[in-house]
Length: 319
Length: 184
Image (cartoon, rainbow over all chains, first blue to last red; front, top):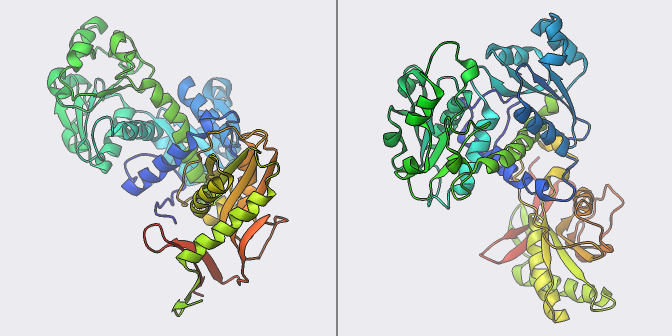
């Protein structure tokens, strides 16, 4: 028993997760998917545990996924969002933490625009912590659900494991914590990762920083890729003109059926959502049931978050 | 019984495992009344799944008809998440058939504290409402901590707390039951 070792109290990022730890989550998630297909979509695993979703940025999708994951594991889930909390009234992070501590939660899921917040809370809070996105830094559960989705499709892609897999991450990886987390996770599993995009939207020295290959032309970056991951153009994070116009962006960088022709046969298309049709991805690609696994990603996100809660709560349950 | 090494004793050699399962199947068959009653065999992963497969095959040939089989993984129903930690290998539940109004033969390899069976019953009822559930185990080693008893036990052995009784695969497809003394 116990071939997969998990001893972590917090999940803050993909950077320090080992191959075995990643598989420990994927294995549990694959089993928990079955729960989500039943009539009674609930297991008693986390009965009596309290999960607090603390969201300093709006994210209906991620918050809903964590909320449902906690409920399907029988935990009590409370949502605190910045818009409706005392943070707006001037409370500091430290005082929010003290208030949380007094409620004695077992697990806190946090999304915060600054990457320091998670580390700060991890040091001072008794509960387990899950990073649900911090600034441009990391978004580990998104990476894990992507890895599960890719893992499911390995037979279709005629791959035994991740070691010969080529994944093209296309678009705005500069502003994307999803790109960073998935690149780190894929490297740990041995895949080749490409960042494909205009120079202005790629992280500084991405080759050295993330061990990825960089392509400045979409056609070259897609060539032979088994997995094509489109990233959302994060216009809300762009203060100045990173791109001339959305229409021009699509003309050069939009994923279309014609452009995907150079990818590997049966290549799958992924997107972390929410998608901008006609900006980074064409509708004909997003809706192509042969290639697009975007909705599988959503279903896998739920199972992966259930698995993360299960693994973390098992390690001393936050004590 | 032969001693395979100082700390391991062979309780059931491979052929005897099969004999015990055959006897279990015969006793279960006598209890199926009327004989056309809708029976589903459900094995508890991981050891119970092995016994359930063998038992189902024998029972099906005794009854002269096909019998559906399902498997339960009870990892997420355990009551010891905190104490054993989150590291057990997680299997998959495979219970696609209808279990409402069926007679369920719940199968495990070794019955000890009864906690696994408690978890399995809870899991089972999340899939439907069986007419009845009967418990069949290959070995009952005593040491119950819950009011749970087998309806059919292949062998009853006395085992202390510092011993483990396990179903293990010796050769491919050859299953034996061994008793091991655990290190202090």
